[in-house]
Amino acid sequence: KSLEVVKEAGTLVKDAIGKGKSIETKSNFADLVTETDKEVEKLLIGKLKNEFPTHRFIGEESVAAGMKCELTGDPTWIIDPVDGTMNFVHGFPVVAISVALAVNKQVVIGIVFNPVMDRMYTAQLGKGAFCNGHRLRTSGVSDLSKALIVAEGGSNRDPARMEFVFKNMHNIIKKAHGLRSLGSAALNMCFVAAGEADAYYEFGIHCWDMAAAALIATEAGGTVVDTEGGPLNLMNRRVICAATQGLASVISQSLDHIQLESD
Image (cartoon, rainbow, N blue to C red; front, side):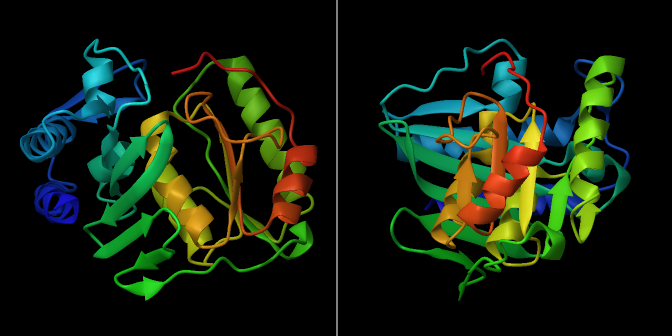
């Protein structure tokens, strides 16, 4: 049922991408929200609530509008209506809808749908990860010098934060095959799950960016951890997603780390 709802939401995104929708800024000029973000979240939460009236919801735009962001043990849907809003505004086709279901704070269902490229990534806990029905496996790469890494500049324009971001990029690119910035956390992790990239790391990410894709990457044989190598905490806003445990460790040791305010 959740897949049908995500497909319906995908039609809204596909029809609206790059079409000059009304755009608002959140924390600064590079942190955007569009009416499509809001429409898609309303659709997803509305339909899922009908189906699962006792479940709780965490949605990016609901939280931005002042709703409490709280992950309890209750079944909770964690939703990013448009992951890659900046890409969406510009018509760059790396855009996704991300929907996860967590039970007892563990994600048991992950759906990430790129409606522009028609790629539907899905995973259920213990049952593997798939894209359009095809089983996903990570690349198995553990050597950073053979790895294609994905990292983002992010939307924070604070000079000290930008210096931190670029220092880490510098440390990684010195040792890696290559570095890419594609603008969607959820899809970055799905590229790792599919073996198309070897790792992705980020500081400042939110639970709705990574909940679904973290399960997809793990079910594809990948490692998803905190940037310092400990277990992933969805609310701590830091992640390394890698093809292998070995690659995750090397990346963790190559990065400077910061603590961020939790979700």
